[in-house]
Each structure stands twice: as structure tokens, then as C-alpha cells.
Image (cartoon, rainbow, N blue to C red; front, side, top):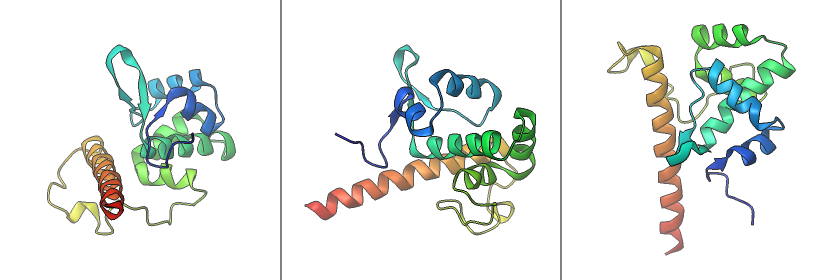
Length: 142
């Protein structure tokens, strides 16, 4: 039985979906601080849909666009996670990616947060949006 689009993926499922070996995903975690799958007891990794989107972007930048690891790190540092995700979608960064707000993030309350903290909040918002969509779907079925 196939998993739904919002289901968490194990490392083997994520690796298969992305077309890379599992050890590559583990390696990328050591090189890119913005790749943080959920880890359960015993260290088992679970990848959320937005984790897959980020990994897809990293793969596209490294393999299709020819960036080096340091190049992707610099791109993330200067342009943010949105550009990394957009690369995985085959976009040049001009896509409006839901759930990232259209309002410039610097004008939002809490704009003084560090970039990494802000990105974690954006990922948390993405998680909450996915959960809400699933709950809405369940409620429609009642």
C-alpha cells in the first residue's frame, strides 16, 4: 500500500524516492545544517514532506546544477531555504512556495530572529499546515 503525500518517510523510502543511496542522505545531514529529519528512539529517521522537498532541492543543486557542497551551503546562507526547495521543484527561485508567507519575513514580528531559527519556524509552520490539511480531509469524510 502506497503512502499518502503527507506521510512521513523512512530513510529507505526517502532514498528511493530521491534516487540516492541512504548513506548519501546521512552524509548530507552532516554537511547541511538545514537538513534535520525527525529522529525517534534508537536514532531512526523519519522524513517529513518538507524534508523531502529540501533534499530534492539539494540533490538538484548538486547533481543537476553542478553546485559543490560549499556552493549549496553559501546559496542557503545567502538566499535561504526557499531557493533550495525551489531548485527541487525545477524552479529558479521565483515560485511562491506555500506555506512561506508572501509578506517579506523581515517585516513580520520576530524579524530579529537568527536565520536558522526563522527557517525552523517556517518548517514548523509547514508541518502545522500539513496536519491541518489532513484533519480537514478527515473531517470532510465524517
